[in-house]
Length: 256
Image 1 (cartoon, rainbow, N blue to C red):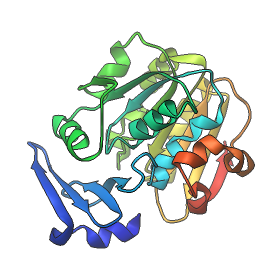
Image 2: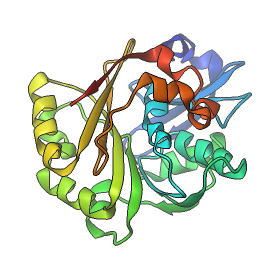
Image 3: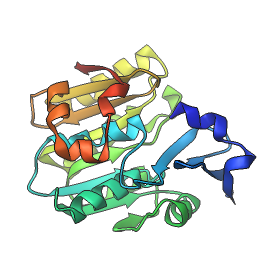
Image 4: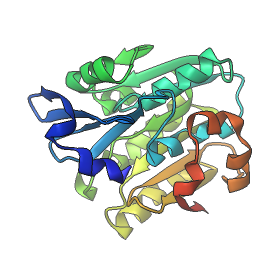
């Protein structure tokens, strides 16, 4: 979605939301509506013609849990953004392609929630306005899928590097559960340390690398030993419904 960066200016600005810690900017052209913060990095995109579709390649990769067939999904989404995960899952549920038993969203910032409701068709199923770490440390609910899209740019401030966090995550994931998360490989050492931290908790770990994005998506499954494959992705009608052309943006899929 890099081509939208050139349209992130006043001519396409439809809303500006001032918060205590940052300012949110919502832009819209003939095809898309998208969100940035003051750094102008695109935080999420919604198709105006097909709002159910997950547009960003990073967000599309976070939906790869759909390749693991479940009778129903109990999902925890950590970080709301533009509610792409929630819109996609609601559409699939309404079309009876999947059964969403429970979908919990955790978002710290009221302004992001307000923006998602006002501009990105977010209708809360179960919403918690609190710190992700606090929710993980206190919840007694169990999930078969956790999705996390909160990115840090330095090892020292990256809560994903905390071993205690992953111990708690594995406790709230059911025995055959999985987590998919966005990660900024700010250094080779940072990625190696993260993989060493999560390796003892998961049977299968896959890394999705993209052509035009520095970030990667990591999928870690507690019980499965099978790795992701392009064939499985191509054969999934459910995934292609809300994440069309996903593989066009994928450079490599690695099994760790």
